[in-house]
Length: 178
Image 1 (cartoon, rainbow, N blue to C red):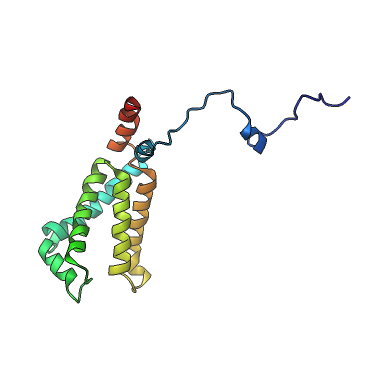
Image 2 (image 1 turned 45 degrees about the horizontal axis):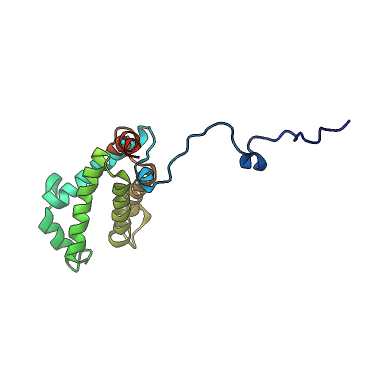
């Protein structure tokens, strides 16, 4: 005889009509609230180790520029050298903002607080370094800033990962607030 008229043929679970069918199993929904999305981060140690590597890099670089640590020149000498015609030739306010941003990245990424903002600062700083400082040079001179930029993008998209204040806020504080 033929198939029963009301019975549908078997469909693969990932096929198009099956995806439109109502679900009989409750699936936990992820909130689309931007605050939840900002603090959501995977329970992985990968972003943690990436954060700590970035902290080491920016503590070294920012410490040289701001405080003269690790054989650096300090704030005033850095600003004077970078604003001169032989340097990058940018305004003092931009050079000072870059130094403050490098130190802010250290604090944000060390604690895993506002990690996505820290990743965005890394992307902006390294993008400026590639175009203003290393622009027109060979790829060999751009490799390190490009790698750090890619790491900043990873933190921007992943978040802080395990052992971050962002994760504690996203999993403990925000669900209780609503």
